[in-house]
Image (cartoon, protein in one colour):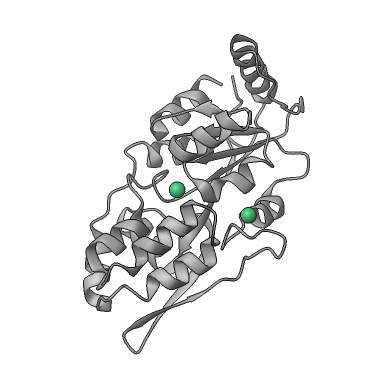
Length: 249
Ligand SMILES: [Mg+2]
Ligand SMILES: [Zn+2]
């Protein structure tokens, strides 16, 4: 069992052990560092991982003034354009006032276990970071209205200007043509030295970070990618599964 807060997370060997035992069950290799007494860092995607659905897609469904965004979505899913081109293009279809958008965002509920998971990780001194290919304006409001503070969040930026939504992409990677916010960069910057890294996600923007961590929790598109490409992962349906995993370890 892990020690009390401030005593260091001592469950790593067990965590690695249980991953390896699952590995044997499934006959796949999961490369877990056998480092003792080092706290893991947990990285979570936001849309459809912490939130119960893709919040950015829901903005398009609710506030798009035309259908151009669907063509961009299709091209992005087929890998013909990157996420930056897709998102920037889709934003031009959204027509909404700041007041309406704020009201809409303030009503979005998160996964029912997100707060419990955060509390559990905090109690064990495990650093938690959100890595999102959505926008700060959107995440800030949704997290705040759900009473979530004191969290490291990395995302693209968004501003209202003359009734339009203007994006800024600070975390692109010149070698990655898929992501707008290529999450690898902020993953490496926040992973403690020698710390075990865990990633929880659901979609195509989670592929880059998932290839660079010790343990992946995956669902939906990310799970399909992992299975197809033999990237080891633990399937999950909701954050309760991730919570239960850490609770046991
Ligand atoms: Mg997502
Ligand atoms: Zn990338």
